[in-house]
Image (cartoon, rainbow, N blue to C red; front, side, top):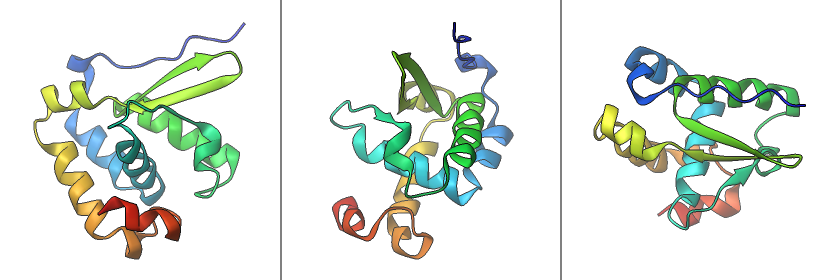
Length: 123
């Protein structure tokens, strides 16, 4: 039986923890990638990020994102489906996620946030 995943409540989210989490290039790339898919309500699974790093390293980054409150993960069978906690982040820190995503989109090529074929889609 899998342990339930811990997600902080909206009131438990702390700005220093969120900003520290976003300072890592891999975690920034994960958030950016999640933001690119949130318009359609799409949740992504762990395998969608394999180009960024190895599985164990990604598991560490997913946990950090979850603990900061930036990302929500739900378990469906053997899959972990992830999405941004946009509503909670916007309520707690208005405009922060939009500013981060806009800045990341501007620098996506230099930061290597996405595979080359997907960078053009960010515009």
